[in-house]
Amino acid sequence: MKKHILEQYSAMQNEKKDLIERINSLNQKILNMEVNDIVSDTVIRGRHGRKPVGVIRIEGFPSREYQRRKHALQELKVKLERKVADLLELTNEVEEYIDGIEDSRIRQIMRYRFIDGMNWAQVAKNMHETPDSARVALERYLADESTKK
Image 1 (cartoon, rainbow, N blue to C red):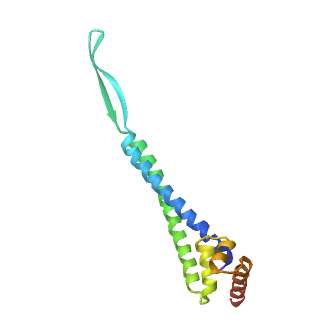
Image 2 (image 1 turned 180 degrees about the vertical axis):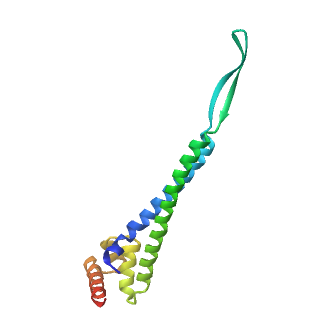
Image 3 (image 1 turned 60 degrees about the vertical axis):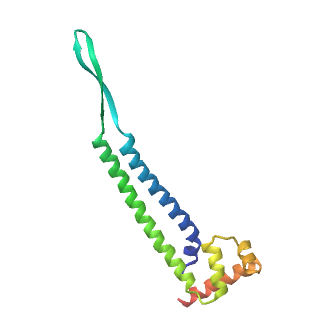
């Protein structure tokens, strides 16, 4: 696995959360259109000479505009859902790669660093070693992995 993909793991998790929030927002917008997009007008109901007999309020739903906007929102939602699926696939690959590492120390360093998003000082504290030793151990492991391929 390439180091840049591992480093992107945390960003992918954040992006996935953001996309899910956007999808939820789009669902809410569609719901709001169905509830709040009612249009109304008032018309005069007959005349008695020059005076109106009464006023009637007419309400309706702008179905053409609603359908156009709903369709556009649903297309965007589908695109976002595809992106979420792609991100889930990538994050699963990263987690499977890390779980497949035989060296327990390296596996822990990778989990802390990439999955938990810790900085080197936090990783070192959890590993009871120095930040440089954890960082160098990971760099050596990744360098060895890249030469094996």
